Length: 213
Image (cartoon, rainbow, N blue to C red; front, side, top):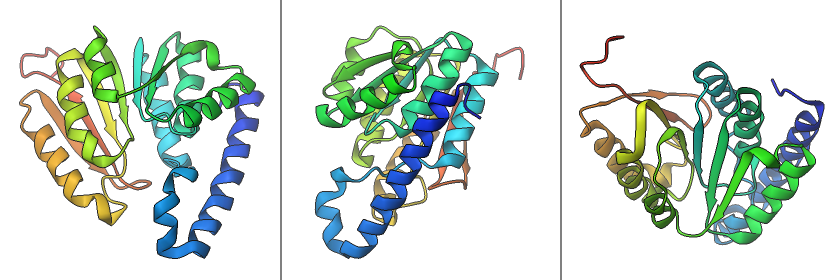
């Protein structure tokens, strides 16, 4: 899947951390929720592979990731971006998480295709002129709809939005319903839910006058 052995090596390290974090979460039980920022909480290999394949097939120029976290999904995005000559703009509120991600991507030889931005996601999206060709939404779920509204005017034709955690965790389902309703309210967004990983909603900007329709 990955283009370079360096990226594959970093992926293996992420998978080892994810397994260790999952075991620790099981041990802590409900008490683990209070320290959830310490855990990797990755999109998972299946979703990562899907994102990688989308980039390789679509060949976008500007990829936006909302929620760098510790860089698991950033690795998939950046590996494919480097292969197609794209740039990944990744946004994260927690500076320590993004610092960890940046260190891993540097080890993978991929940091040069990533534009690292730390701060409030909605404010940073509003400050960017766009356009965005592919967007990954993987932040706290109550921010999905505000981020959609910020990103939507800056989507290129046939841009893709991939929103993670549409099925799990169950605690986020009310915010997910609000997000999905907001997507369906956009007449030029065609959308579907894929039951892989924790559930991925893929939405494509596709106007009725598109000659390919």
